[in-house]
Length: 166
Image 1 (spheres, rainbow, N blue to C red):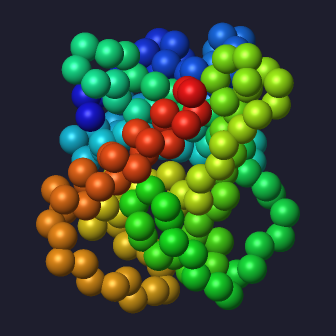
Image 2 (image 1 turned 180 degrees about the vertical axis):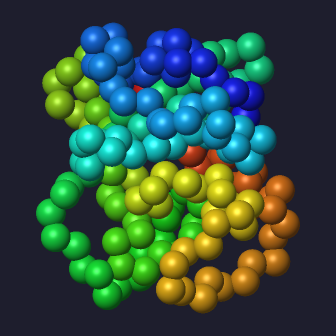
Image 3 (image 1 turned 90 degrees about the horizontal axis):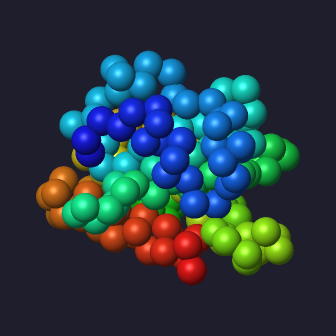
């Protein structure tokens, strides 16, 4: 992913107001992020634990698509394992969250939303590239290459983004 500026990130959001996008907390150390290893940008808001954000690069010549997410902060079962529906990484306990995104446009203003089970830290690109491993779990070995895993992940995140925009 090419590095994005603060302005590019803030103007990319399709499911929140300009004011909300202006007030959201960007990831710390934006310029030091491992951009070469990121296929999309995901981060949790440290001052609002129920908030997360994704910025997905647009197709050639298109601008990125930003999506504001929210999750429940209630108690979770710390014993079970869960599967991220984006990168297909299995995590123990609370490593996967159900996150909801308001739909873009009038449907979102009416309260319609879509959900996705996703890595709680929103670091799917790092898991797909095997640069990060879930804590305390022996993951199943896949025969796919990193490039194939990344392509699968990008297809899934694009499908989610389309569900938010439609």
